Length: 500
Image (cartoon, rainbow, N blue to C red; front, side, top):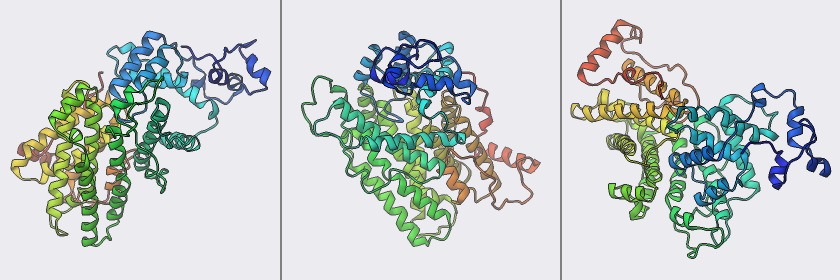
């Protein structure tokens, strides 16, 4: 499965033959096409790393890594592939090299063998070389890359009209819809993470685009026949789409409240409205989609336990974001604030408990990177309970904080960028010890809660006492006092060097 053919021959599924290594292939010469392998060899400005040898991916490794990808990632962060079709394409070598290398790079993260995990970097480079064949002159700042390529993917999806499905579900049409809705969801997460406008945010989207069919029906589709019952029963991924539709309004509300000029009644009404929308979404879920331990086991038996838990983790995360503003002061600034505080803490606790449950159940683990950010937000709410809550609430909050941090450390083994989430949480805990206004919803807190791809800046807020800082003896004394009271978690005990 070595990538040696030019893009044109791979696309046309023809044998790629060249007279010399540096010459265009015979097919491209005959048709007067710009042979991609020839163009690449002529590009002298390409970085040295892009000229490295693409690793050989034998059948055994490819099957292992694809299986690992489907087990750990498919259906959580995104839901694209019809598994039977993907397996057939892999075994028959019909899958594109770029896609195969990308899937295998992700799947290799979770291999129990260190020599296989070590293939992640060269496989990623190989996938990038193939994807970037027509984009090799594109250069941007590193953390903008994912949004840049996301926008390109969205543009391609719009041109191909992937959001318009035929009446009768087929593997091709349903895969196209799943790609479209995965891009829709990614657009919301990535735009939030970078603090930039969403792209897929126009009146045509999402109302005119059919939602994906349920996962069981999707799996039953075959290449030889259409689905017998063409009714579009929504599944877990479809419910994720309808949930994420509320994310844009939640972002907008938090940014508006952070400006500090919103009237208390207006603020209260806006929070209630979005909170009610989320509760209505939850109440409208069919019985088998409600969060119960029985439903977790049921979905687990169908290899959908991780998908099901991911859906409800996002629900609790979005709900905590809605009510987070209520934590900023002890004094009640608007009617109903106490209820909102309780709701915020309840959702953060439910998130943490569910995440812990997922780590104990086979096939239910949450190993996609956004979990790191969501866990950090839930932990920020738990810190409020730990430092300012009632004594009887402290043990549970401390236990949930500890298990959340353990989950972050575990996630870091697969996604090194989780280190930034860990550092954000540790920074926030120090701010909580320095000031009583640590949970105030200002511009800094908006970045902490929403803009997870951007680094934190220095935060200006009143320090009590003014002489207190993280290097002073007073800070150490205060930390020790809180530790004795059980109101402080020493994350450094967990934060050890990676040894996966």
